[in-house]
Image 1 (cartoon, one colour):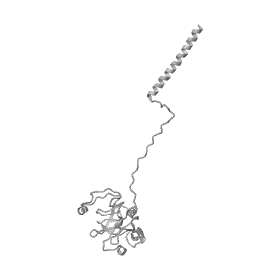
Image 2 (cartoon, one colour):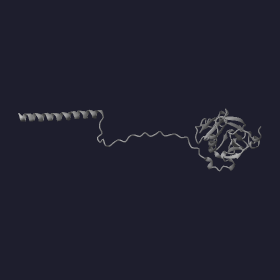
Image 3 (cartoon, rainbow, N blue to C red):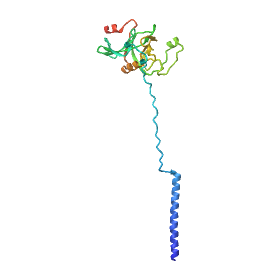
Image 4 (cartoon, helix red, strand yellow):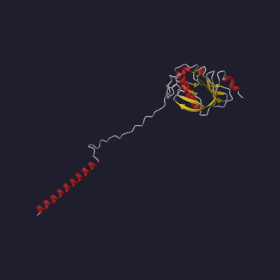
Length: 231
């Protein structure tokens, strides 16, 4: 009887152990089906880091005039300038190829400019109606008629004839703009637009707003003599 009891007890213990192993195996199997465990869980997979999308930036305004020796008189500078026009006014001195931005107290910022070639100069009073950085260029029909080889549209950028900045004058086809040909500053070369070096036009652009008054003097009138005597 004692041996039988011992055998029964041993059998029960074995059954309990086998049952526990079976339950553990079932549980392990169910977990493995739900989410397989890694073979070596201590080797952790590094987290995936998302890289920020690259930012597209407008091209820098290069000082192309540095490669071209500009006469001292065409370099941007503050000069004495007597005028009754309000500070912030732009005055285009066409015959002398200067642009003056009136500061006040008898002073102005002076820039060297390129102006319209013979037959394309103009005069009058306008206001800046729009400003654009690295503007696209769509030649007007009048220019296409004279120069049929011109592109019908050109995207903005360093190779664009309008340069780094443009300030549009009223509803006209004329602009104050930059140029990728700094050697033309001080000459009569355009179809009526006023051009500055890219560095200078960027500086002027930062100083004026839409609505700025622009006075363009005729070829036979000099700003240094006439503007100070206006009533």
